[in-house]
Length: 276
Picture 1 (cartoon, rainbow, N blue to C red):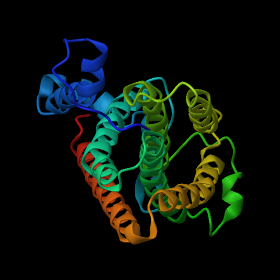
Picture 2: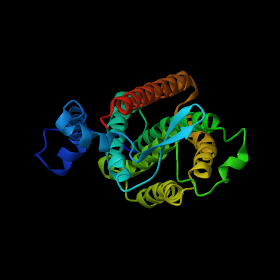
Picture 3: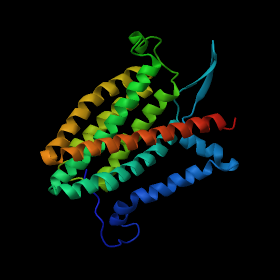
Picture 4: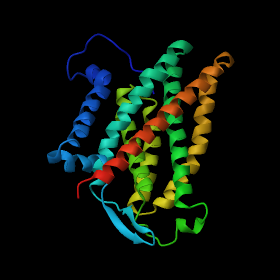
């Protein structure tokens, strides 16, 4: 995806203004929702956006286990993390990829492809690690038959539900990013099809309650995606700059891991302190 360019101050609400400042505008909306958590009057409404909904308590031998089901309010949660994805995309683009692009002196076409692969490599690395951790935690590898037993899987753990909601939010955010990043018209059909296939898989598995199989397929598919985008980055970076690629991968993975741990910690704390 193309790097953003700075220009003279554009007119408010003009196309240039939205392209240059869309992440700042979205950050304001996210901040308002987060501030809503601090006040008792608005906390309940804010939690609908921030925390996955439709939780139920299931009795177990060790006490109670909180599981989640799907519902219409999930769209609001997807909307919130859609905004989060736009912010993270802008941070990675502006503070990592744009700076590397300036040092490499690539052509405009190669800059677009470099930025696209940099964004997707970061996402698929996080997705693979997160998904594999969830698969191991849920015990799908220990007992593969659990992937289809007791179908439909109406109840999900927090990790599984949040995985699907956040992934749907990420791919939805990729659609307006095609506009914000000024993707060439020749590239639009390929990228729209790519995004649509991911959304079809994620939303389909979620709606027909086949999340266990869907989760495993996402993890498996992340591996060739990582290899492809890493190879394309190596192609754009010559041998003398291969160390730069290692630094890029390490920085992107570290930032993603820290952000995921922070979000997970905040959501766990919000669920514990959530008003009944």
